[in-house]
Length: 537
Image (cartoon, rainbow, N blue to C red; front, side, top):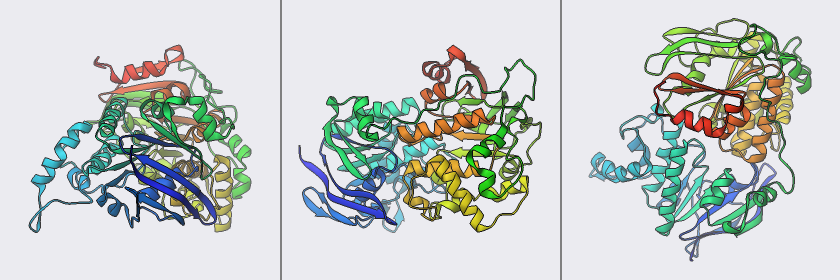
């Protein structure tokens, strides 16, 4: 089969850190070619070069056998090389149609031809199963549907080469299955599909060829997927290094059962974590770093019209409580209520120790609530700022709770401590966050909220788009926080993650609690069945 797009001797460095070191790669028509590797291996840099987002320092691109140079992703799209980025590049204040045709607006004379846009987009949107109407504002859509809009924008151009960078990271299982069918159809039509994913089972199931990157170099190039297995891929990615273990046990450390008395403290509290991480020493702050072990988090009969109905739940100190549901079911709204982003019409939220947060997100942060989102570009990081500024950006709010003043030098030192603690791979704390891989950007988000010393940590798909090694490191961090007595709420689109990481899982359907899974009844199959059940809650 003909090679459609190739890269020869591609090299790229950022601030003295080598991202790619002489990579050769080729993508053939009518094949699905996977790019895999740890976060920081060079995948994001390679696809950005292929799609015209950044130029290489050395090497060349060949399109149809001829040298090609893309000055931008829009120019690449005009030459029918399209990318669906892991970091969504949508206009939230525009509607679905405007975003689908962001690169090319059909016109009738001087006017935008909305009728033509609807006609061209309709089959693509239907094929993807996007439920949102074409005139819905993107900012009103959940993350999964936004990702489908991004995919639709690429497909409407009928590309010769389609680069999919973590395309399933925000999708529900049914949406993932549908996308895989679409990828199969593109293969049959002769499209070269470049598939970047950390879901290795998907790679082996739908891809024809696999290239593995490690430390900016190709360690396995264009191998036939049929001849590979999971163990071989993991070994190639990690170079024989085992991922760090650290899943929490089913029973929270130091946490009593739901029937036992309230207010029991975890064995260490966040002050213990501070000691282990060197928080107080790094920041110059004295005294206790948090109050995670002071009691339970409770939601009591919380109602938000059109979203939640009489939701009651609680999480004990040291517990990782899963919140599961389909897109639009209300499970993410539970996190938004606790985070202060959504005000209940009735009911109440009791934080550990019995406190109730002041209205709004800042009030929740001051009360010790942190939120880690899988949408790191949207709500997690300031991409053009250095790492250290991102890590300490909410610390000023936290200081209002803990008291104290910090110098810029102390803030940089605190950022260094926390980034080392979560294992951020970077040249220095002065490096801009947008130069880091997706997984390292997410670690920066974790470092930011650890620096703010929350007593309640809310997580919305926190491992979205993260490789097997980085994911294990984040699970280990969550386990340490559980041991220290922190309250953690985890919403995830991955049933396996919920089953393996959480002590219990609360299932939300149609805005109400429909099931609570725990013990032997907490399995990935049970979670999947519960969120998709046909029974009325």
